[in-house]
Image 1 (cartoon, protein in one colour):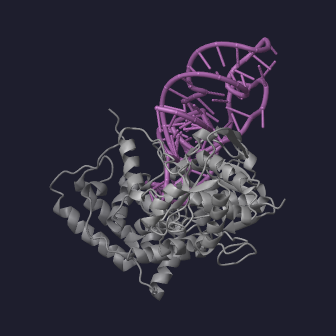
Image 2 (cartoon, rainbow, N blue to C red):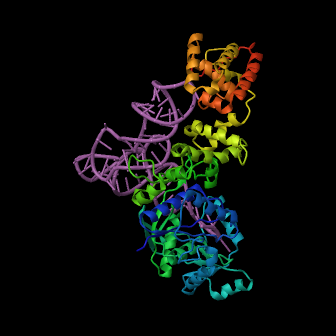
Length: 503
RNA sequence: GUCACCUUCGUCUAGCGGUUAGGACACCGGGUUUUCAUCCCGGCAACAGGGGUUCGACUCCCCUAGGUGAUGCCA
């Protein structure tokens, strides 16, 4: 049988990182087995539908680099691939179950059901629907119809017996029918299907062979199997993927950090890093390998290597992957990747000037291996594109020296810098080295005040290259202004915080 | 409450009856280095608990505990 899998996002919000992972596993499963990957839009919730979310689905997957074989935008033999365009289909199928007595109409009001549910929740208990209309006679139901109440169609879940299904990960899963959700709604009063109906009808009609979805669907999988049986169909094979949690064991949410793919993108994560990290969340290849390109994953993915237990999303490991992938990009790629982040930070203009481009070209090699996220560039290169006119006195003072030493140190550095633009970095460095030795100070003590004076920070890209980025004029101006600043407070004895001292 | 699923270092994981329980991130220490970062070397750190089965259990079974999920006219 042909392998056919689908990713069925609901356009109610931005694509969640967990959804991307589900999509990824489906995609990899299809690609690794020569199957088809299908995109289906599940927009049956008209209240929560958001057109921006729909747009976000396409943008996200284009960015990540997934291509589906069938979907709303590319077509296919099993369309339409948008559920709201298939409502007639669901109504027909609901009617079939109604006619065969496997489903029934119910006239409860949505509000009263919600009120009951909330009341039960307060008591710490949730029982589910009370099946009020399950065995009600038609004549009695007629009274409700006369009131003009639009009914929902509910599935008559068998009260006896058990239902089992095959799960690639979980094995054989069995559940008593009485433990299945009691008589869930199939068709809402607005004529739209619920997930349960639409998903079963579509997966069957679209000849989906495997359903890879999150483990939150395990409890309802039995219901779905019951539905397949009710229609006289064979259910597909299931594979319930472990969920993604935050570091506190709770479902991943905004509290933990970024959750939408869009946010990750905005923070400067590369699609290949995201894909690699996500693929390793709940899946492994062997006991060694960490790095995989999407292409490699398409060949190597094997659902047998999936883990059953939920995984905690580790933002730090993602950062590590991202830094590694940034380092793999070429200089010109990185230059273009960081450009929008510099614009966003207001550090360069858009479009950039020739001068900015020139500086950018020279700056990329200095920050390349220092980037974890592309957005880090705004901090790393701020001193190049924005003025530095205030200083933290504590930072200026080298270890084991006092503020009174700083002016001399800075002046010395300034004179050693004479003509630095024309000299190679190594030569400048040697001058400093020799001077430091002659003065009996550490090289670092000579360089740190200079670094802070010019970049405003104790951490910077390689100093001499950074100064060249700025140019001699700006460099000397900053030193001079810093000198003024530090001489004003030389009276006060300020020492650099010596964090190294352990007492 | 009920039902279901899950349980190896802090985190992601390897392991599929016999291993000094391996790797990666993070962390700590050291080296390279003008700071930061990269890179290199080293270290810390785990089989939830209790019963079985077995010559032998991280591996198989049961129970307990804990975690998570479902219990919606949301998906």
